[in-house]
Image (cartoon, rainbow, N blue to C red; front, side, top):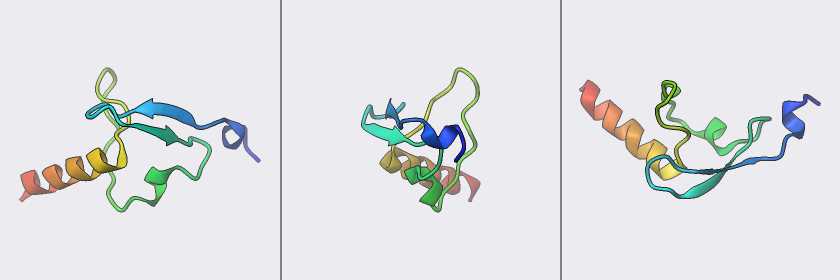
Length: 66
């Protein structure tokens, strides 16, 4: 077992909508199972997004690339 897997989940608020959710850095985080992946935000930018906002951001990014 790694040290990260022993950490309690972080309680976060979505950088866009304020919804609360858990981040499990040690594995088993909801975002690992997401089909969409976005680049990590730049330093000083947004932190993690909730599932709904991550999906919306991915859709907007796909539309911009078309």
